[in-house]
Amino acid sequence: MGWMADETGLEKRTANYVPLTPLSHLRRAAKVYAGLEALVYGTKRYTYADYYTRVSQLASALHQRGITPGEVVATLIPNLPAQAEAHFGVPACGAVLNTINTRLDVNTVAYIFDHGEAKIVLVDTQFLEVAEAAKSACDGDGPEIIEVADTQAGFPPSGRYPEYEAFLAGGDPNFNWIMPEDEWESLALNYTSGTTGKPKGVVYHHRGAYLMTMGTVISWRMQLHPKLLAIVPLFHCNGWNHSWMLPALGGTVICCRDVTPEAIYSAIAEEGVTHFGGAPIVLNMIVNAPDAARKPFDHTIEVFTAGAPPAPATLAAIEKLGFNVTQVYGLTETYGHVTESLWDADWDGLPDDKKASIKARQGVAMPMMEDITVRDENHQQVPMDAATQGEIAICGNSVMKGYYKNPKATEEAFAGGYFHSGDIAVQHPDTHIQIADRAKDIIISGGENVSSVEVEGVLMSHPDVSLCAVVAKPDDKWGEVPCAFVELKPGKSPEAKDLIAFARERLAGFKTPKMVVFQELPKTSTGKIQKFELRTLAKSL
Image (cartoon, rainbow, N blue to C red; front, side):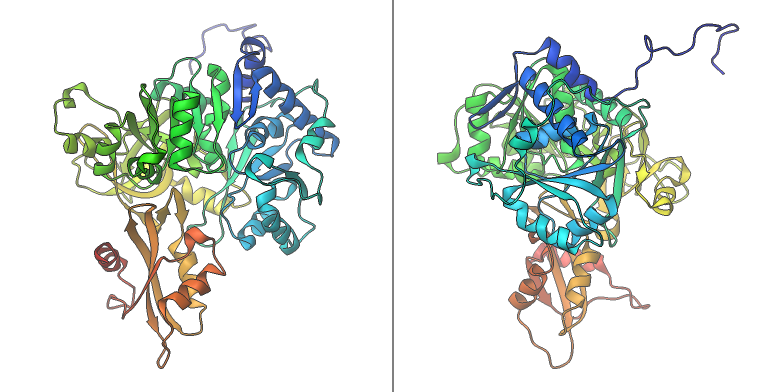
C-alpha cells in the first residue's frame, strides 16, 4: 500500500533517514547558536557552546561510571541547570532519564528507585535526606548518589558524596554521544502520581518527545530566541518537553528554583522572559502579587496553563496585566500538553467574562497529535453538544510507549485503539473539549495529582477512624486541596488537627488533607460512598 511500481534503490539510508530525537536540537544549536545564552540561573550564565560541553561531560562521566545504554539514571533536583543538563546528558550516553518529583515522600521515592532500577541518582543538597532514607528503604542497594550543590540558594556541598561539578570535570568534553538507532528507543521514565495505589512508570520514546518539541513551537506561536522561565517542574512530564525544545529555537531557559511572585516578575523585567508554563496556582500568584513584588514590563508574556481548569475570573484578571493565556491539557502519559484552546477572532467583541470562559476550555488536538476526542464506554464518539459526557480519548505520536513492567495496565489504557485519559469531559459543536469531572476522583493540587485512594488509605490506618472519603475542596491558592470526611469509631474523639498531623507524617505535604470534617458519610443502598455529594459539600465549606 502506498508503494510505486518499482522502488528499487529507494531504501532508507543514513543520508535520508535519521531517527527523530530531541538530542539533535542541542547538537545543532552548539554549532549555529554557539555564542547565544542557553541557560541562566542567578549569576550562572551558559552559552550553547558551554551547554553542549557540559552535557557531553555529563554523558562521558556517566559512561565512565559504568552506565550502559538502556539503564536508568534518576534525578531529585529543582529547576536548576543540572536538571536541564541531565535531560540531554543522560540520554546522550544511551541511558533513560528518570526525573523524580522532589515533593514525594520517602516511601514513594524508594518504590521508584526499586521499580525503575536507577543505577545513579543526581540529588540536590536540599533533598539528600530524602534520597538517603529512600536508598536505605530500597529492596536492593539503591542508586549511587551524586550530589548537586546550589550555593546560590544556600545549599553548599555536604561533603558526603561526589559533587556534580567535580563529577562533570572528570568527563570528556569531546565524548561521542550515543544517539538512538531507533526513534522508538526509550528516552525517559516518568512516574504518575499513583491514582490507584502505587505510581505507574510511564515510558517516553525519542520520536514522541521530538514531535512534541515541534508541535509546541507552532501552538505557542514561537519565533527565534524565546526566553522561557522554567516554572513547570522539569520532573513533571520533563517540563512539558520545553527544555528539549528551546535549543531548536536558540532560546534561553531561565531556571527558577522557587516559584514566587518576586521571582516571576524579576525574570520578566530583568531577563526579558517571553514564555512560561504553569498551573492555575501560578496565575493566581501573579494576579494576587503584592505591589512590592510587581515590576513593570512592556511586552506580552505567552503563558500555557494546565492542571485543574483555571477559574474564568483568574483568566480575565491576568490578561489585563500583560499575559496572554492559552489553556492546554495533557497527562504524564502524553509527554505533557496535547490539546490547546484555540481562539476565534469572532469572539474578540465578547464581554471579558464570556471570553475567559471560552479560554477555560481544554481545546483541540495540537499539531503533532492525530486525534483527541470524547468517547463513550463503547469507544464511540459522543454527540458534540457540550452536554453529553464521555472520556477523553487520545491518539498520536506523543503518547507513551506504555507502563513500565505493567503490560496489563498498558493494555487497559490502550483498549479500543486510543489512550484512555480517565478524564470525563464534554465536547462542544466546534470540537473543543471541556473537562466535566475527573475519573477516579483525582485531586489536582498546585498542578500535582493527588490520589484520594492513597490519602484515604492513610487516614483509615488511624486507630480512631471507622470510614473516610477524600475529595477535592476548591482553594484560591492551590486550585484544589484534599478535604477528608471521616466517620469515627464509637467512643473516639480525635480533633481534626490530630488526623492532619497523622497524615502529614505519612504523606507528602501536598497530599495531606487541609480540612477534616467529622460526619456520617452519604452512601448508596449497596454501601458505596457518594462522593459527588461530598464534593458539593466541600465547595460550600
